[in-house]
Length: 597
Image 1 (tube, helix red, strand yellow):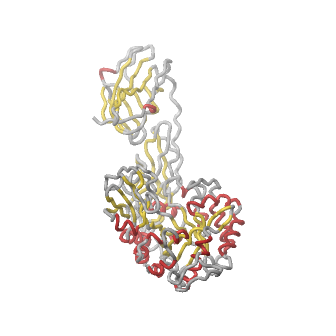
Image 2 (image 1 turned 30 degrees about the horizontal axis):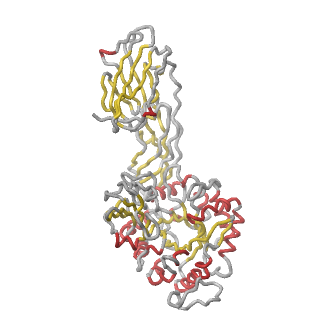
Image 3 (image 1 turned 90 degrees about the vertical axis):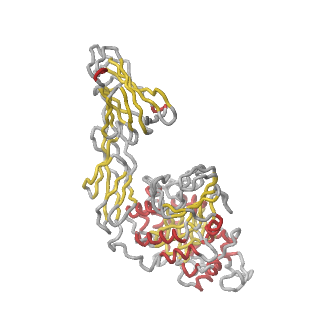
């Protein structure tokens, strides 16, 4: 027999000693537990002074929990509401007598809202039934020309939620028992608005969810970005050390001719101001003729050497490339909270640094990499939902319209996630584009797994967290009113991996992070390409199992697919983290370049 399990803490004992209007009580107990299931039992007692000729026990289960078999009662359900009625031989109960019926079932839920013959199971009066709460704001996935799938977080109710009404443009289009709905027969290139309301077992309707605005693909409504697609890569100042990666590598790999923008990372954010990140790498390190972009050796006394001077020489060879100085990043985002307390002072400091006469000709603007406004990253920020908007507004006022202002932002497409905690829509008016960090969704910080691709383009069956994929993030941002032409899709030039894995397909258990060259659980594509070649693809990205190690990463083939999707969505372009993870001939950067043509 199928069975269901209820945790011991979730058991209900609803009987009471007092006799009340209902003249009966019902008590729930767990008879046995065998790990994967258990046997439950309801005991009905006549607490009145007259004989009962029938009895009916009612209770609610959360969605996903069901009774699969029962004895000594007729058990039926309507949605999540369950009813057990006496059979012919056990309906009569004299005063003080008891009768029991039992069942097996499936699912993790606990019974609640018990009634016996319409009254409270503890012998008191029937409790007041409150309407359900609002469901979570829906998100969309699988958006095509004519269809999409909605998902939302469940509403709560004191007696249990029976179903959900789905509204499109204010008109009800469906009633469903679960927390998802697939809508079809739509018109391509058309924007639709969706809301959801919950209905409890008493058919009471709760408040509406927040509204989702989503546009179907096709229809010619997303013109190509003005000025051509963005093809942006991050260049890290620390790459000149152990990684031995220099600006000249952009030339020798052929990458420099295939990009439009470089984000130079990172400047520090400290004391509420922009500051130099690594003075030696930034402008002090000297290059000999062989390692310099222009073939001329630096002198010991030149005012600006290092990466900044090499970027200057690169721009002379490739004048179409725009260079932005990126501030913050994972480690230095903790300084943004203080900066948000005085946005004007922060903007003044950044302008003074970026437009310093020593290198003003090198930089075309500023990039803000705040991980994450009004949310948690390495540290937690509590500066408020308007902080990002205020910061970017101040930067735009200071830098003016001729400089580029961009920001790297979260790709958390879950309900109530990071993208819902700050005013990204309000801040969008001040940026030229957002770089949506559609990578690092999953990794070996969850040491036991399950294994999952760190940069899934779409959702898939078994994905560990709903909304953690590129499509969900882009859909959520568009739903907030941000145009696709202000959004770049993020690509990781590295893989994330686990060890102690026996299963080839995603979803397997692990024992910890796989070994990596510089850090456990992460490895460059240029290494993984040879050491652990891809063995499969899922959700638009690749994965590989070699020995007991399991990795996920993008390849030229999966990048090609992502670039096709990027164009279909009318996005501004793509960006990647970071140059040094690519091969010596720049095959990943070339895949982005080719895919966006």
